Image (cartoon, rainbow, N blue to C red; front, top):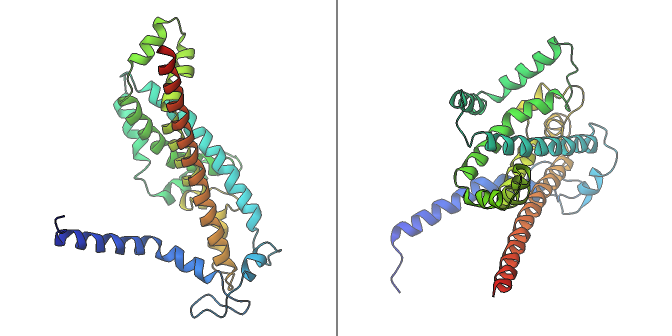
Length: 279
């Protein structure tokens, strides 16, 4: 076996430093969340316990943690569903060139490079000047879509650029209507990509701060609540909250990945059964 080149160890060390930089702050917060009852916000730790996790589920003197969590979760689901539906429709629309398609594409992508705080300010002003209520479920919902929809559309553009249209032609030859073709042929094939778009939509919405800052109205989402707590809470309960939200985020990702894996196994099993039937 040939020895590894020196460049391998250099790149491995660089990658290790990258992982430390990426996950070090999260691990530090997780460790500090297990402080003892007399613990503070910094090292050295004063004992270890689950005290601050228990304290998190009790009534807090400052803030509305669980109310903000429910709002972020509901908003994430709203953004996720809307992003998936609009991204699929946009991907289908852009399969054929139409007048103004290039301009429309760049207008969609431009929202990604506009500073998020300016988007939040603009959406908030539009709603307030129009006499509409500035609320997390209306203006906040619209502001977050300017962030999630471009990502979803870019994914769908890539998916449909690689899509084999012979499947659709075969379905039409067998008498399927356009809706039946989309429902029974197109959507099942692109289902893993739809799960990816849904994951993008939910996670980007769940932890979005800047575009929600001036559009959430009187009720905070979880990122805004955590930011507010940093100026008022002086105990490790805020670290316990950060640890739980991180675990929740990883749990959501694992659920989506498990769904993709189960769908892949189901498709493989169906293909195997179809092959046996032909034999």
